[in-house]
Amino acid sequence: MSLIVQKYGGTSMGSVERIQNVARRVAKWHAAGHQVVVVPSAMSGETNRLLGLAKELSSQPDTRELDMLASTGEQASSALLAMALMAQGVAARSYTGWQVPVRTDSSYTRARIRSIDDVRIRTDLDAGRVVVVTGFQGVDDEGNITTLGRGGSDTSAVAVAAAMQADECLIFTDVDGVYTTDPRVVPEARRLNVVSFEEMLELASLGSKVLQIRSVEFAGKFKVPVRVLSSLTDPLISLEEEMASGTLITFEEDKKMESAVVSGIAFSRDEAKITLLSVPDTPGVAYSILGPVAAANIDVDTIVQNQSVRGTTDFSFTVNRNDFARALDLLKNQVGPAVGAADIVPDENVCKVSIVGIGMRSHVGVASLMFRTLSEEGINIQMISTSEIKTSVIINDKYMELAVRALHKAFGLDQETPAVI
Ligand code: ADP
Ligand code: ASP
Ligand code: MG
Image: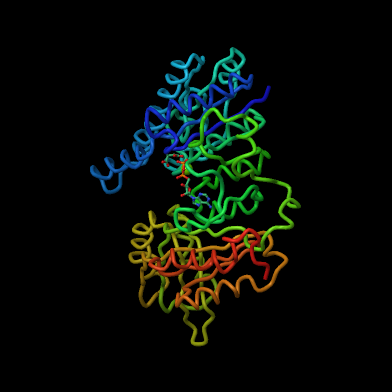
C-alpha cells in the first residue's frame, strides 16, 4: 500500500463530466489498496472570473478580500469532487486549507506555506477514506484565508506530499508531461521522460506554467517524487501504464548525462522594463534605485547597468507586469528625482525567452548559438542574463513566439537526438 497525492488542474476539473472522470481515476487507485489524498484546482476559468469581478469593483482591490474571493473556486471543486467520489461508492471527505490546517504567512495573494498538520488527513485515510484537500489556499496565524499565488495548487499538492511523506505526488494536467517548450506555441515540442530537478526549477522560474516554481522548490527540499501526467487519458488505464507515463522530475543527474545540451525553452510575457537615463555612476546608485523598489515588495528580475566614461550611466531593470504601474509610480515620483535621473523610460512590450539545460555547464558556444539564431531572425536583444544552466534574453514581445520556435529548431529540440554543439 502506498500513499499517493494526486493534484488535478483547472482543465482536469473543468466540467461535471471531467470531475466524474477524476473521481473514476481516484477510485481506481483507492480500489487497488492505496491511500489517496487529492488536491483539486478551481474549475478552469473560475479564478480569472472571480478576479475579474474584483477588478470591476476596484482597480486595486484589497488583497485580503481578494484571497477570500479567489479561494472559493477551489473550495467549490473540492466539495464537488468529494460528492463525485461518494456517488461512485468511495468514502471521501473534503477539507479547506484552514480545516487541515495548511498554515501560511500573511502575504496575501502570494503566501508561503509554513506547515501542514497531517492529523486529520491521516485519521481519515486510516478510516479508508479518500481525502480531498483544497488547493491554492491556507490560513495565517490570525485566521485569515490566504492564497499561494497563481498556479498555487501545484504547491499545495507537493507540500501535502512532503508533509505526509507520500510515496509519489502525481500532478495531473491537460498535457501528458513536461515538454521541451510549451506545446501550444511549438507543436513540434517533445515530451521529456525525465527532467532534472534543477532544470525544472529553472524552467518553472523562467515562466513554464506547467508547474508553479514553489512546488518544484518543495519537491527539491523534501525530495518528493513528482510526476507530471495527463488527466485526459482513459481514467481506467492500468496503474502500471499510468506510472510509466508523463514526466518524472529526477534528482539523479546521471540520468541526464546522455541528454541534450539544452533541454528546454521557457518564456514569459509577465515582464516590463524600466530604464533610468543618465544616473550618476557612483557607489550606492543601484542601492538607491532598487532599495525603495524592494521595500515596496516589488520583485526585480533582470538588471543591466553599463559602465560610463562621462560619469553617468543608464540603468535598466525588469519587474513583473502586475507590479509595473506601482514600480513606475515609485520611480517617477520618488526614486528618479532622488538619484537625479534625466528621464525614466517605461516599456511594457517586452518578454523574456530562456534556454535551459544542465549540459550548458560543460559546453561552450551555447549562448552564442542563441544570439546567432535571434540575429538571423532580426530580433534585437535588449538585456541578457545568465546562470550556470540558463541564458535569458529580454526582447520585444511581438517576437516572442518567433524566437521560441527558432531557438527550439536551432537547438534540435524537435529531433529525437537533439543537436550537440
Ligand atoms: P493546470 O490547470 O493543470 O495546472 P496549467 O495551465 O497551469 O494547467 O499548466 C499546463 C499548461 O502549461 C499546458 O497546457 C501548457 O500549455 C503549459 N506549458 C508551458 N510550458 C510547458 C512545458 N514545457 N511543457 C508542458 N506544458 C507547458
Ligand atoms: N486556481 C488557481 C489559479 O488559477 C490555482 C491553480 O489553478 O493552481 O491560479
Ligand atoms: Mg497550473
